[in-house]
Image (cartoon, rainbow, N blue to C red):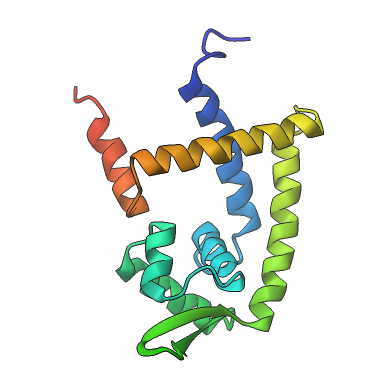
Length: 162
């Protein structure tokens, strides 16, 4: 027990740090690491009707997304396909090898997540994830993230100067 145990920032920071380390190890062989995983997940679930919608959904700058998609496409994990209703728009779809790799990465991420949450009984793990999902949706609705780069800039700007 420490004096910071009840501090939300400290608590979230410790859990976040553990998750970042674990997810980085799991997604290390995927182009773009965890971001590549997010893009591949969206592409496999047909959640992004276009490249620009995908960038907006994931908070990835369009320039960064273009390079990330190039890398994923070179690895034959995703493909850009013309939208049948608008030839100017490109849909991002997961390839069969991309879907197979996604299944493997999801399995490894689930194992890492189980390891991180092992201090809680299974029901509390589900409750925690459900509560965090609702909290994240609420926080994002109040202050939407247009770009993950902007989040880092915001954090840097909020730091006190010496």
